[in-house]
Image 1 (spheres, helix red, strand yellow):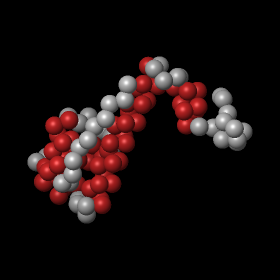
Image 2 (tube, helix red, strand yellow; image 1 turned 135 degrees about the vertical axis):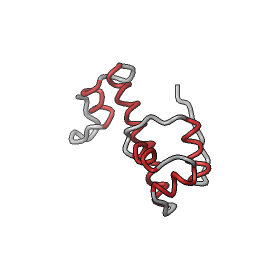
Image 3 (cartoon, rainbow, N blue to C red; image 1 turned 60 degrees about the vertical axis):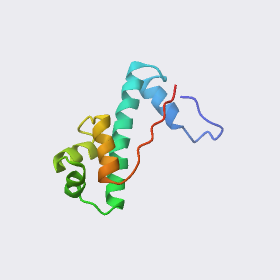
Image 4 (tube, rainbow, N blue to C red; image 1 turned 90 degrees about the vertical axis):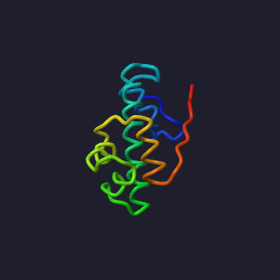
Amino acid sequence: MKKTANKNITTLDEILDTKYGKKGAKKREKWEQEFESFRLGVLLEEARIKMGLTQEELADKCGTNKSYISRIENNASDIRLSTLMKIIQQGLGGQLKLTLKL
């Protein structure tokens, strides 16, 4: 494992390289995709809590059900882009902006 200037510090990328392979490796890509899904759930949960909404209230505002919101927040469900946009726009009163990294 390659160390940075401070010999006691290992970067996250170095840990991931060791455990899952370099970027582009199938195992690493799978981990990256699952992490982004997890991160999305955390972002939605934090936004919901910040707005003072329960999962049920958010679900009612965007036309879905509490269990679906819970599954998204707990990384147990894939989410369609159209549903994500409803949750953010109708449920949270926000705006979704996407970026693409190549």
